[in-house]
Image (cartoon, rainbow, N blue to C red):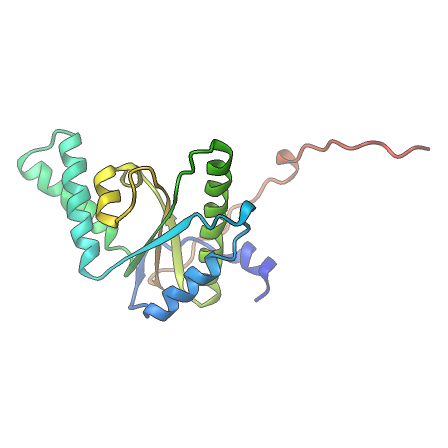
Length: 191
């Protein structure tokens, strides 16, 4: 499959299964690091959460989220169970983060480069016949979650990439509006 076909046909897959070998994850991360990166700062980090650690992280996050909502008793346990279930939707979770440079221009460039790395990772997974989905949510902003992952408080989690073998059909593509998102600025040729 060529790059254009991959871009047009890749879809996020919400339900994933199977076991993904560490060397496959390593290859996906290596592909991600080929993203364009102004100043070659290589700001990205990839934290892989798999196996029982998904449930452990889900329980940690679930307890934080339940407390923030004031849940107690059975309501609290049900909230935690839902958050654990979300992190078990895929056999491998890759938390893609970027450091935050003190220079706001570099920080912005690093964030953009890390987002491009996520796209490379998604396309690499698709090219290998795997399913993947880019996830975020309040979990990516939580300092306790960052600590669990070994990240600095100032690091920014850009994506949680769920990876696995597809356990469902890919959704149909949506139409893309091109003309409405292009604004042309160009000189008219003389004559």
